[in-house]
Image (cartoon, rainbow, N blue to C red; front, side, top):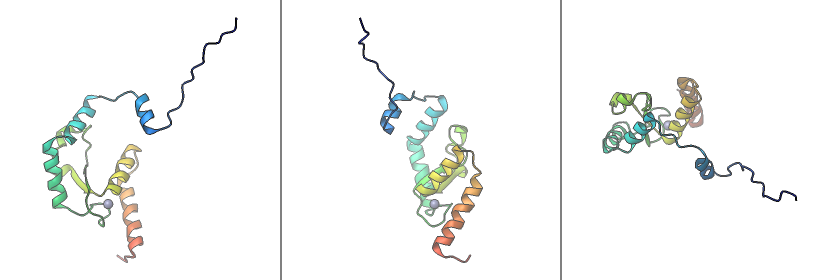
Length: 127
Ligand SMILES: [Zn+2]
């Protein structure tokens, strides 16, 4: 008698949601700390203060500040999470560029310089 049992193949996830469902959750202590920092009222207050103090993105110096970046990451340095000196106010675009450079281990200052020179060209500044 031939084997008629259906063959189930593992399908590659098509959407981001499906991919997340297949990936194991990452609940390392550092991840929990970073998440707890970002959802705390203390962080909400501190990041609002930083955005008020420097309303222009510190990278491109042309867009309004939308996000606050930890220079020393929260996961690696939870003790600096609420240190005002460890914060940088950035626009969303620059923050994404910066985080992506950090993840790929690319020189952050090189990316920053490139980003600024590109913007100066775009705005036609001679400086
Ligand atoms: Zn920016």
